[in-house]
Image (cartoon, rainbow, N blue to C red):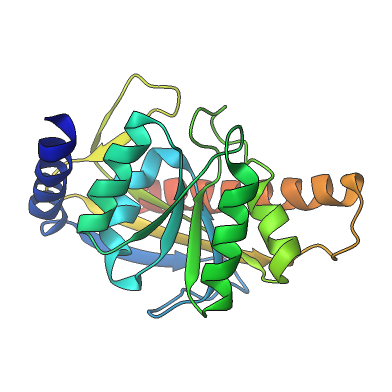
Length: 214
């Protein structure tokens, strides 16, 4: 029942709210906002999943989603918005998921990670995007979407549900280069931290933009 009803209802509500939102794109120096159709690897923080799902629906990206029941709900909801999904996680099916995402990239399409998902901790990226970048040689893009007004859930990620008619900052950071194919664990960790820093710069820039223009 839930799988049949919840994705359709969520997609409908998101479309109703999304139609009222006003998006404002901002970038840091050296960053270039993507336009459809994109290619490569992109990352964002889990709490802005709904906003990203609506804003990037025309980009036709594929996203790595866990094999849990909640993951199935998310996969079906995003599928209604035009996204592809690859099932896997950092704990179960991660290697298979990365291989499937590699295939997506080799077909010239884009893949997206909720970098700190699915269980957190908040604002701490996992190693998955870095490993995929190493496998494909693709740089990693970072962005963050922040509504001026939102309901904030009491979840680990402080999940955002935008309120109708909100302004939304779409913040892009500079891309992070892929590590070399022979990179050791220390280099991979340094690249993961560089990606984490880029994601945080995008978040903080969005927060500052809305404060200064409120």
